[in-house]
Image (tube, rainbow, N blue to C red):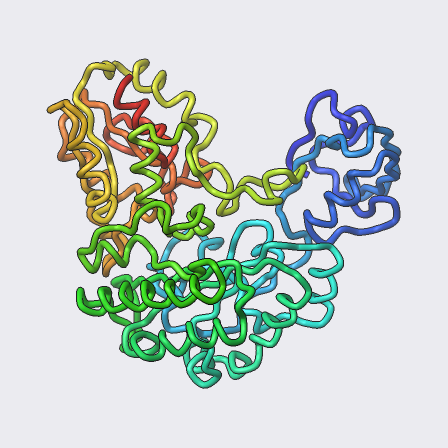
Length: 456
Protein backbone atom coordinates (compact mmCIF):
# COMPACT_ATOMS: atom_id res chain seq x y z
CA UNK A 1 0.00 0.00 0.00
CA UNK A 2 1.26 3.44 -0.83
CA UNK A 3 -1.32 5.52 1.06
CA UNK A 4 -3.98 5.18 3.75
CA UNK A 5 -6.56 7.95 4.04
CA UNK A 6 -6.87 9.59 7.44
CA UNK A 7 -9.97 8.55 9.39
CA UNK A 8 -10.84 5.94 6.76
CA UNK A 9 -12.02 2.45 7.78
CA UNK A 10 -8.54 1.10 6.99
CA UNK A 11 -6.86 3.79 9.10
CA UNK A 12 -9.17 3.18 12.03
CA UNK A 13 -8.41 -0.55 11.80
CA UNK A 14 -4.71 0.16 12.22
CA UNK A 15 -3.58 -0.53 8.66
CA UNK A 16 -0.42 1.41 7.79
CA UNK A 17 1.44 2.53 4.68
CA UNK A 18 3.87 -0.21 3.68
CA UNK A 19 1.70 -3.06 4.94
CA UNK A 20 1.42 -5.94 2.48
CA UNK A 21 -2.11 -7.23 2.21
CA UNK A 22 -2.11 -10.99 1.87
CA UNK A 23 -5.79 -11.90 1.98
CA UNK A 24 -9.19 -10.25 2.24
CA UNK A 25 -11.81 -12.57 3.69
CA UNK A 26 -9.52 -15.48 2.86
CA UNK A 27 -8.96 -14.50 -0.78
CA UNK A 28 -5.84 -13.06 -2.37
CA UNK A 29 -6.83 -10.56 -5.09
CA UNK A 30 -4.90 -10.77 -8.34
CA UNK A 31 -5.69 -7.24 -9.45
CA UNK A 32 -7.63 -4.12 -8.58
CA UNK A 33 -10.76 -5.58 -10.20
CA UNK A 34 -10.92 -8.39 -7.65
CA UNK A 35 -9.75 -5.94 -4.99
CA UNK A 36 -12.77 -3.73 -5.55
CA UNK A 37 -15.21 -6.62 -5.41
CA UNK A 38 -13.71 -7.80 -2.12
CA UNK A 39 -13.41 -4.43 -0.35
CA UNK A 40 -16.99 -3.53 -1.25
CA UNK A 41 -18.10 -5.93 1.49
CA UNK A 42 -19.10 -4.51 4.86
CA UNK A 43 -17.17 -6.93 7.09
CA UNK A 44 -13.55 -7.55 6.14
CA UNK A 45 -10.98 -9.85 7.74
CA UNK A 46 -7.67 -8.60 6.34
CA UNK A 47 -4.42 -10.56 6.67
CA UNK A 48 -1.36 -8.32 6.36
CA UNK A 49 2.40 -8.65 6.59
CA UNK A 50 4.24 -5.85 8.44
CA UNK A 51 8.02 -5.94 8.82
CA UNK A 52 7.98 -9.71 8.29
CA UNK A 53 5.22 -10.33 10.84
CA UNK A 54 1.80 -11.56 9.72
CA UNK A 55 -1.20 -9.94 11.39
CA UNK A 56 -4.98 -10.04 11.01
CA UNK A 57 -7.29 -7.07 11.45
CA UNK A 58 -11.03 -6.69 11.08
CA UNK A 59 -12.71 -3.79 9.32
CA UNK A 60 -16.38 -2.96 9.78
CA UNK A 61 -17.84 -0.41 7.36
CA UNK A 62 -20.87 0.34 5.27
CA UNK A 63 -21.02 -2.01 2.25
CA UNK A 64 -19.73 -0.21 -0.82
CA UNK A 65 -18.01 2.47 1.25
CA UNK A 66 -14.32 3.02 0.30
CA UNK A 67 -11.78 1.20 2.38
CA UNK A 68 -9.39 4.15 2.11
CA UNK A 69 -6.29 2.46 0.70
CA UNK A 70 -4.21 3.33 -2.36
CA UNK A 71 -2.54 0.25 -3.77
CA UNK A 72 0.75 0.23 -5.66
CA UNK A 73 -0.58 -0.89 -9.04
CA UNK A 74 -3.68 -2.04 -10.86
CA UNK A 75 -2.31 -5.57 -11.37
CA UNK A 76 -0.95 -7.38 -8.31
CA UNK A 77 0.35 -10.44 -10.11
CA UNK A 78 2.54 -10.18 -13.18
CA UNK A 79 1.25 -8.08 -16.09
CA UNK A 80 0.68 -10.29 -19.10
CA UNK A 81 3.23 -9.12 -21.62
CA UNK A 82 2.82 -9.18 -25.37
CA UNK A 83 4.43 -12.00 -27.32
CA UNK A 84 3.80 -10.40 -30.71
CA UNK A 85 6.63 -8.71 -32.59
CA UNK A 86 4.71 -6.16 -34.65
CA UNK A 87 6.90 -4.07 -36.93
CA UNK A 88 4.73 -1.04 -36.24
CA UNK A 89 4.86 -1.29 -32.43
CA UNK A 90 5.88 2.13 -31.16
CA UNK A 91 7.60 0.64 -28.12
CA UNK A 92 10.20 -0.86 -30.46
CA UNK A 93 10.73 2.65 -31.83
CA UNK A 94 11.52 4.36 -28.54
CA UNK A 95 14.98 5.85 -28.06
CA UNK A 96 17.26 4.27 -25.49
CA UNK A 97 17.61 5.56 -21.96
CA UNK A 98 13.96 6.23 -21.10
CA UNK A 99 12.43 4.96 -17.85
CA UNK A 100 11.89 1.20 -17.83
CA UNK A 101 8.11 1.28 -17.47
CA UNK A 102 7.78 2.81 -20.94
CA UNK A 103 9.30 -0.26 -22.57
CA UNK A 104 6.72 -2.68 -21.15
CA UNK A 105 4.61 -4.28 -23.88
CA UNK A 106 1.38 -5.55 -22.39
CA UNK A 107 -1.30 -7.72 -23.96
CA UNK A 108 -3.40 -7.94 -20.81
CA UNK A 109 -7.18 -7.90 -21.12
CA UNK A 110 -7.40 -6.48 -17.59
CA UNK A 111 -5.53 -3.36 -18.67
CA UNK A 112 -7.82 -3.14 -21.66
CA UNK A 113 -10.78 -3.09 -19.31
CA UNK A 114 -9.23 -0.72 -16.79
CA UNK A 115 -7.26 1.67 -18.95
CA UNK A 116 -8.49 1.31 -22.51
CA UNK A 117 -5.33 -0.46 -23.71
CA UNK A 118 -5.63 -2.69 -26.76
CA UNK A 119 -5.18 -6.43 -26.67
CA UNK A 120 -4.55 -8.73 -29.64
CA UNK A 121 -6.04 -11.76 -27.80
CA UNK A 122 -3.05 -13.91 -28.84
CA UNK A 123 -2.46 -14.80 -25.17
CA UNK A 124 -6.13 -15.01 -24.24
CA UNK A 125 -7.23 -18.31 -22.63
CA UNK A 126 -10.35 -20.21 -21.65
CA UNK A 127 -9.86 -19.06 -18.06
CA UNK A 128 -9.64 -15.45 -19.21
CA UNK A 129 -12.81 -15.83 -21.24
CA UNK A 130 -14.66 -17.31 -18.28
CA UNK A 131 -13.59 -14.47 -16.02
CA UNK A 132 -14.46 -11.73 -18.52
CA UNK A 133 -17.93 -13.15 -19.03
CA UNK A 134 -18.59 -14.03 -15.39
CA UNK A 135 -17.46 -10.66 -14.03
CA UNK A 136 -18.80 -8.65 -16.95
CA UNK A 137 -15.47 -7.03 -17.79
CA UNK A 138 -16.84 -4.85 -20.54
CA UNK A 139 -15.97 -2.96 -22.68
CA UNK A 140 -12.70 -4.33 -24.03
CA UNK A 141 -10.51 -2.95 -26.82
CA UNK A 142 -9.15 -5.38 -29.40
CA UNK A 143 -6.48 -4.83 -32.04
CA UNK A 144 -7.71 -6.36 -35.29
CA UNK A 145 -5.43 -4.89 -38.01
CA UNK A 146 -6.61 -7.48 -40.55
CA UNK A 147 -9.20 -10.23 -40.73
CA UNK A 148 -7.23 -12.22 -43.30
CA UNK A 149 -5.40 -14.85 -41.19
CA UNK A 150 -2.18 -14.70 -43.19
CA UNK A 151 -2.02 -10.91 -43.18
CA UNK A 152 -2.72 -10.73 -39.45
CA UNK A 153 -0.07 -13.38 -38.72
CA UNK A 154 2.43 -11.43 -40.81
CA UNK A 155 1.62 -8.13 -39.08
CA UNK A 156 1.79 -9.56 -35.56
CA UNK A 157 4.72 -11.82 -36.38
CA UNK A 158 2.95 -14.45 -34.37
CA UNK A 159 1.42 -17.63 -35.75
CA UNK A 160 -1.45 -17.29 -33.26
CA UNK A 161 -2.46 -14.14 -35.08
CA UNK A 162 -4.29 -16.37 -37.55
CA UNK A 163 -6.51 -17.99 -34.91
CA UNK A 164 -6.80 -15.59 -31.96
CA UNK A 165 -9.74 -13.67 -33.43
CA UNK A 166 -11.86 -16.69 -32.53
CA UNK A 167 -11.90 -15.13 -29.06
CA UNK A 168 -13.33 -11.95 -30.54
CA UNK A 169 -16.22 -13.96 -31.91
CA UNK A 170 -16.71 -15.74 -28.58
CA UNK A 171 -16.67 -12.49 -26.58
CA UNK A 172 -19.21 -10.88 -28.88
CA UNK A 173 -21.42 -13.97 -28.60
CA UNK A 174 -21.25 -13.58 -24.81
CA UNK A 175 -22.48 -9.99 -25.02
CA UNK A 176 -19.17 -8.26 -24.24
CA UNK A 177 -18.88 -4.79 -25.75
CA UNK A 178 -15.82 -4.63 -27.98
CA UNK A 179 -14.15 -1.68 -29.67
CA UNK A 180 -11.76 -2.58 -32.46
CA UNK A 181 -8.64 -0.93 -33.86
CA UNK A 182 -6.90 -1.16 -37.20
CA UNK A 183 -3.39 0.29 -37.42
CA UNK A 184 -2.86 0.83 -41.14
CA UNK A 185 0.64 0.22 -42.47
CA UNK A 186 1.25 1.32 -46.08
CA UNK A 187 1.82 -1.66 -48.34
CA UNK A 188 0.73 -4.20 -45.71
CA UNK A 189 -2.91 -3.74 -44.75
CA UNK A 190 -4.04 -0.62 -46.57
CA UNK A 191 -5.88 -0.21 -49.90
CA UNK A 192 -7.57 -3.46 -50.99
CA UNK A 193 -6.54 -5.27 -47.80
CA UNK A 194 -8.25 -2.60 -45.68
CA UNK A 195 -11.38 -3.05 -47.80
CA UNK A 196 -11.21 -6.81 -47.23
CA UNK A 197 -10.77 -6.28 -43.49
CA UNK A 198 -13.83 -4.04 -43.22
CA UNK A 199 -15.78 -6.52 -45.32
CA UNK A 200 -14.64 -9.27 -42.96
CA UNK A 201 -15.74 -7.25 -39.94
CA UNK A 202 -19.18 -6.70 -41.43
CA UNK A 203 -19.47 -10.39 -42.29
CA UNK A 204 -17.95 -11.97 -39.17
CA UNK A 205 -18.07 -9.36 -36.37
CA UNK A 206 -21.01 -7.03 -37.05
CA UNK A 207 -21.65 -6.63 -33.30
CA UNK A 208 -18.46 -4.64 -32.80
CA UNK A 209 -19.37 -1.37 -31.09
CA UNK A 210 -16.91 0.61 -33.18
CA UNK A 211 -13.67 0.39 -35.13
CA UNK A 212 -11.00 3.07 -35.25
CA UNK A 213 -8.67 3.23 -38.23
CA UNK A 214 -5.39 4.89 -37.25
CA UNK A 215 -2.18 5.54 -39.18
CA UNK A 216 1.17 3.97 -38.54
CA UNK A 217 3.43 6.08 -36.36
CA UNK A 218 7.07 5.99 -37.43
CA UNK A 219 9.77 7.40 -35.19
CA UNK A 220 13.34 8.11 -36.24
CA UNK A 221 14.42 5.11 -34.16
CA UNK A 222 12.66 2.35 -36.11
CA UNK A 223 14.76 -0.43 -37.58
CA UNK A 224 11.96 -1.88 -39.70
CA UNK A 225 12.51 -1.29 -43.44
CA UNK A 226 8.85 -1.89 -44.36
CA UNK A 227 7.56 0.80 -42.02
CA UNK A 228 7.09 4.25 -43.54
CA UNK A 229 4.64 7.14 -43.16
CA UNK A 230 1.61 7.51 -45.43
CA UNK A 231 1.79 9.72 -48.46
CA UNK A 232 -0.93 12.34 -48.93
CA UNK A 233 -2.53 10.12 -51.58
CA UNK A 234 -2.48 7.04 -49.33
CA UNK A 235 -4.05 8.97 -46.46
CA UNK A 236 -6.75 10.25 -48.81
CA UNK A 237 -7.45 6.69 -49.97
CA UNK A 238 -7.98 5.58 -46.37
CA UNK A 239 -10.43 8.46 -45.80
CA UNK A 240 -12.33 7.43 -48.94
CA UNK A 241 -12.44 3.75 -47.95
CA UNK A 242 -13.72 4.59 -44.47
CA UNK A 243 -16.41 6.87 -45.89
CA UNK A 244 -17.57 4.21 -48.33
CA UNK A 245 -17.74 1.54 -45.65
CA UNK A 246 -19.51 3.87 -43.24
CA UNK A 247 -22.29 4.05 -45.80
CA UNK A 248 -22.42 0.26 -46.04
CA UNK A 249 -22.43 -0.24 -42.27
CA UNK A 250 -25.10 2.44 -41.89
CA UNK A 251 -27.30 0.84 -44.52
CA UNK A 252 -26.97 -2.68 -43.12
CA UNK A 253 -26.54 -2.12 -39.36
CA UNK A 254 -28.02 1.33 -38.80
CA UNK A 255 -24.71 2.80 -37.59
CA UNK A 256 -21.45 3.83 -39.22
CA UNK A 257 -19.25 1.63 -36.97
CA UNK A 258 -15.90 2.51 -38.57
CA UNK A 259 -14.13 5.84 -38.15
CA UNK A 260 -10.82 7.26 -39.35
CA UNK A 261 -8.58 9.12 -36.92
CA UNK A 262 -8.25 12.90 -37.13
CA UNK A 263 -4.66 12.44 -38.23
CA UNK A 264 -5.80 10.91 -41.50
CA UNK A 265 -7.77 14.00 -42.48
CA UNK A 266 -4.84 16.21 -41.54
CA UNK A 267 -2.38 14.06 -43.49
CA UNK A 268 -4.76 13.94 -46.47
CA UNK A 269 -5.41 17.69 -46.25
CA UNK A 270 -9.13 16.98 -46.02
CA UNK A 271 -11.78 18.71 -43.87
CA UNK A 272 -12.99 16.77 -40.84
CA UNK A 273 -16.37 15.02 -41.05
CA UNK A 274 -19.34 16.81 -39.53
CA UNK A 275 -19.89 16.25 -35.77
CA UNK A 276 -23.08 14.22 -36.15
CA UNK A 277 -21.29 11.63 -38.28
CA UNK A 278 -19.21 10.58 -35.26
CA UNK A 279 -22.32 9.19 -33.54
CA UNK A 280 -21.51 10.42 -30.07
CA UNK A 281 -17.71 10.18 -30.39
CA UNK A 282 -17.40 6.63 -28.95
CA UNK A 283 -13.67 6.50 -29.77
CA UNK A 284 -12.68 10.00 -28.74
CA UNK A 285 -9.82 8.53 -26.66
CA UNK A 286 -8.26 7.12 -29.82
CA UNK A 287 -8.06 10.41 -31.68
CA UNK A 288 -11.39 9.95 -33.45
CA UNK A 289 -13.27 13.25 -33.58
CA UNK A 290 -11.03 15.10 -31.16
CA UNK A 291 -10.75 18.05 -33.52
CA UNK A 292 -14.52 18.38 -33.88
CA UNK A 293 -15.13 18.10 -30.13
CA UNK A 294 -12.42 20.69 -29.48
CA UNK A 295 -14.16 22.99 -31.92
CA UNK A 296 -17.56 22.48 -30.29
CA UNK A 297 -16.14 23.00 -26.82
CA UNK A 298 -14.17 26.06 -27.83
CA UNK A 299 -17.15 27.71 -29.52
CA UNK A 300 -19.39 27.05 -26.52
CA UNK A 301 -21.79 24.82 -28.48
CA UNK A 302 -21.23 22.23 -25.76
CA UNK A 303 -20.66 23.29 -22.17
CA UNK A 304 -18.95 20.18 -20.83
CA UNK A 305 -15.76 18.74 -22.30
CA UNK A 306 -16.01 15.36 -23.96
CA UNK A 307 -12.86 14.20 -22.20
CA UNK A 308 -11.99 10.54 -21.94
CA UNK A 309 -14.43 7.79 -21.09
CA UNK A 310 -13.53 7.05 -17.45
CA UNK A 311 -15.01 3.55 -17.40
CA UNK A 312 -14.62 1.27 -14.40
CA UNK A 313 -11.16 2.55 -13.52
CA UNK A 314 -12.35 5.94 -12.33
CA UNK A 315 -14.55 4.34 -9.67
CA UNK A 316 -12.08 1.78 -8.35
CA UNK A 317 -10.98 2.52 -4.80
CA UNK A 318 -7.23 2.23 -4.67
CA UNK A 319 -6.42 2.13 -8.38
CA UNK A 320 -3.34 4.24 -9.16
CA UNK A 321 -3.56 7.23 -11.49
CA UNK A 322 -1.12 5.87 -14.05
CA UNK A 323 -3.42 4.77 -16.82
CA UNK A 324 -4.58 6.15 -20.11
CA UNK A 325 -7.81 7.38 -18.57
CA UNK A 326 -6.12 8.97 -15.55
CA UNK A 327 -5.61 12.71 -15.01
CA UNK A 328 -2.37 13.80 -16.64
CA UNK A 329 -1.36 16.79 -14.54
CA UNK A 330 0.27 16.40 -11.14
CA UNK A 331 -1.26 17.98 -8.08
CA UNK A 332 1.32 20.75 -8.18
CA UNK A 333 0.43 21.69 -11.74
CA UNK A 334 -3.25 20.80 -11.77
CA UNK A 335 -5.69 22.57 -14.00
CA UNK A 336 -7.20 24.40 -11.06
CA UNK A 337 -3.84 25.64 -9.85
CA UNK A 338 -2.20 26.43 -13.18
CA UNK A 339 -3.20 30.09 -13.28
CA UNK A 340 -2.10 30.92 -9.71
CA UNK A 341 1.28 29.31 -10.40
CA UNK A 342 1.81 31.67 -13.33
CA UNK A 343 0.75 34.72 -11.33
CA UNK A 344 3.01 33.85 -8.41
CA UNK A 345 6.02 33.78 -10.73
CA UNK A 346 5.31 37.24 -12.09
CA UNK A 347 3.47 36.43 -15.33
CA UNK A 348 0.63 38.88 -15.86
CA UNK A 349 -2.77 37.61 -16.86
CA UNK A 350 -2.85 40.29 -19.55
CA UNK A 351 0.44 39.13 -21.10
CA UNK A 352 0.54 37.77 -24.68
CA UNK A 353 -0.34 34.10 -24.90
CA UNK A 354 1.49 31.26 -26.61
CA UNK A 355 -0.35 27.94 -27.00
CA UNK A 356 2.10 25.04 -27.02
CA UNK A 357 1.21 22.11 -29.23
CA UNK A 358 2.56 19.63 -31.75
CA UNK A 359 2.63 20.11 -35.50
CA UNK A 360 -0.69 18.35 -36.04
CA UNK A 361 -2.31 20.16 -33.12
CA UNK A 362 -1.22 23.46 -34.64
CA UNK A 363 -3.30 22.68 -37.72
CA UNK A 364 -6.36 22.01 -35.57
CA UNK A 365 -5.92 25.07 -33.37
CA UNK A 366 -5.16 27.56 -36.14
CA UNK A 367 -8.79 28.25 -37.18
CA UNK A 368 -9.93 28.39 -33.55
CA UNK A 369 -7.29 30.97 -32.61
CA UNK A 370 -8.10 32.92 -35.77
CA UNK A 371 -11.73 33.15 -34.64
CA UNK A 372 -10.71 35.01 -31.47
CA UNK A 373 -10.65 38.76 -31.89
CA UNK A 374 -7.20 39.18 -30.37
CA UNK A 375 -3.80 39.74 -31.91
CA UNK A 376 -1.81 38.75 -28.81
CA UNK A 377 -2.51 35.02 -29.04
CA UNK A 378 -0.23 32.77 -31.07
CA UNK A 379 0.38 29.09 -31.57
CA UNK A 380 3.83 27.86 -30.58
CA UNK A 381 4.50 24.75 -32.62
CA UNK A 382 6.80 22.21 -30.96
CA UNK A 383 8.75 20.11 -33.44
CA UNK A 384 9.27 16.60 -32.09
CA UNK A 385 13.00 15.94 -32.39
CA UNK A 386 13.01 13.51 -29.46
CA UNK A 387 11.10 10.82 -31.38
CA UNK A 388 11.49 12.22 -34.89
CA UNK A 389 9.89 10.58 -37.89
CA UNK A 390 6.26 11.52 -38.41
CA UNK A 391 5.65 12.00 -34.67
CA UNK A 392 3.66 15.23 -34.47
CA UNK A 393 0.86 14.84 -31.91
CA UNK A 394 0.62 16.95 -28.76
CA UNK A 395 0.48 13.89 -26.53
CA UNK A 396 4.07 12.93 -27.43
CA UNK A 397 5.66 16.32 -26.73
CA UNK A 398 8.66 15.90 -24.45
CA UNK A 399 10.33 18.18 -21.95
CA UNK A 400 13.46 18.38 -24.09
CA UNK A 401 11.58 19.57 -27.18
CA UNK A 402 9.49 21.99 -25.15
CA UNK A 403 12.62 23.36 -23.49
CA UNK A 404 14.30 23.90 -26.85
CA UNK A 405 11.22 25.66 -28.21
CA UNK A 406 10.51 27.79 -25.14
CA UNK A 407 14.11 28.94 -24.88
CA UNK A 408 13.56 30.81 -28.14
CA UNK A 409 10.29 32.38 -26.94
CA UNK A 410 10.11 35.71 -25.03
CA UNK A 411 9.93 35.79 -21.25
CA UNK A 412 6.91 37.21 -19.44
CA UNK A 413 4.33 35.65 -21.78
CA UNK A 414 1.67 33.14 -20.76
CA UNK A 415 2.39 29.70 -22.18
CA UNK A 416 -0.48 27.20 -22.20
CA UNK A 417 0.42 23.50 -22.17
CA UNK A 418 -2.11 20.66 -22.76
CA UNK A 419 -1.97 18.09 -19.99
CA UNK A 420 -2.16 15.20 -22.45
CA UNK A 421 1.66 15.18 -22.67
CA UNK A 422 2.04 14.68 -18.90
CA UNK A 423 1.62 11.71 -16.61
CA UNK A 424 1.76 12.62 -12.94
CA UNK A 425 3.45 15.85 -13.90
CA UNK A 426 6.20 14.11 -15.90
CA UNK A 427 6.94 14.17 -19.61
CA UNK A 428 7.84 11.00 -21.47
CA UNK A 429 11.54 11.88 -21.29
CA UNK A 430 11.42 12.17 -17.50
CA UNK A 431 11.52 15.97 -17.30
CA UNK A 432 8.85 17.99 -15.48
CA UNK A 433 7.36 21.44 -15.97
CA UNK A 434 9.83 22.74 -13.38
CA UNK A 435 12.63 21.87 -15.83
CA UNK A 436 11.23 24.15 -18.54
CA UNK A 437 12.89 27.54 -19.14
CA UNK A 438 9.54 29.38 -19.07
CA UNK A 439 6.55 29.23 -16.74
CA UNK A 440 3.72 27.22 -18.25
CA UNK A 441 0.07 26.83 -17.36
CA UNK A 442 -1.10 23.23 -17.59
CA UNK A 443 -4.61 22.98 -19.03
CA UNK A 444 -7.01 20.14 -19.60
CA UNK A 445 -6.77 19.09 -23.23
CA UNK A 446 -10.20 20.32 -24.28
CA UNK A 447 -11.82 23.37 -25.82
CA UNK A 448 -13.64 24.43 -22.67
CA UNK A 449 -10.40 24.82 -20.69
CA UNK A 450 -8.69 26.60 -23.60
CA UNK A 451 -11.57 29.04 -24.02
CA UNK A 452 -11.54 29.88 -20.31
CA UNK A 453 -7.76 30.33 -20.29
CA UNK A 454 -7.89 32.73 -23.22
CA UNK A 455 -10.57 34.78 -21.49
CA UNK A 456 -8.73 34.93 -18.15
